[in-house]
Length: 454
Image (cartoon, rainbow, N blue to C red):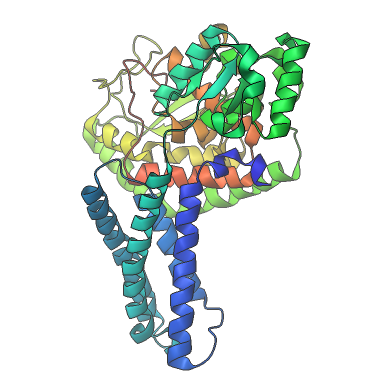
């Protein structure tokens, strides 16, 4: 099952951190419970909620990430983040205890769980720090990937790896005759751009190497495992004809996804209604203009539909017609910049999710005026129309705010990855990553001079 979840396998550090925290808390809780009450602990929903809150807040705040700084700064950063998570978890637990004090049992009392949580925070910080040191000690210079293909393909893939801050450990073998002498430890694997162009003798060599344990991947398989995206210019019609980039309508997963869209969007509309009201008043007071801004966007199968957003630009922002948004665009109001950073301007689109024109997770919808040009310049661009557009997506949580035709192609590469690997669990990961982006105020800020979204 995990082999079909490359995005999960690439997060081994995160999985290890979560398992360590769960295991450590379970051991401490069980030992303390046995010592104090002399019996095994039963299922406690407040305690389960407490542990869940600890893990989610640790992920959102970045406690499970390795800070790219020196050892001393990493320890300080971990201690500060642990303190924030501890304050949030402890505060929430004590607030719940205060509200339900009449129904709380002695086994969930403050005198038992509060000291336990403090001890757990201390030991968890030590274990996470040790985990980081172990991972860094074992992360020696990775072996080279060998590419059997054109030099142009090597240049494209190397640039993509550099952009993602991955080690550019992709090279072409100096002599193909030496392939049979490769051992499992000599390289990370062999990437073949096109198996059909290889001579029969070389295909036999690859089969022998594969039987020895050397990893042999196609171009699509390598992009999925290493880049977690599919550059559209590298995909061929043969790749598409295999059906790996198609989405069968009416499946149980899609119906379950639609049910989740309706339930979550309904709850979010109710919970964020006060925020929308305050934002509407501030927008109105700012310049007296309309609160909402509407546009046509391309939806499922390319069918246009209207979306509504909180207005973040001047009223006359597009008096000269549709245009890209530039970095530091003067048309964006001061309040609009805050709304974009926190993505609060997207909240009215929850109504489109409720109506079925959008989903919570999917490719960001583009304006039809720009798509005509994008389809001419970007291969396989219309594949993104096979999915219902979303408020957030794999491209939005992995790539900065789109700012040009080149950025649109990069975003499409992530959309294609999502199309091939769509699942409930990937949607859940994107949801958590979106929450982390909102928490860190990493919203709609173009990375270059132009952007397609007003």
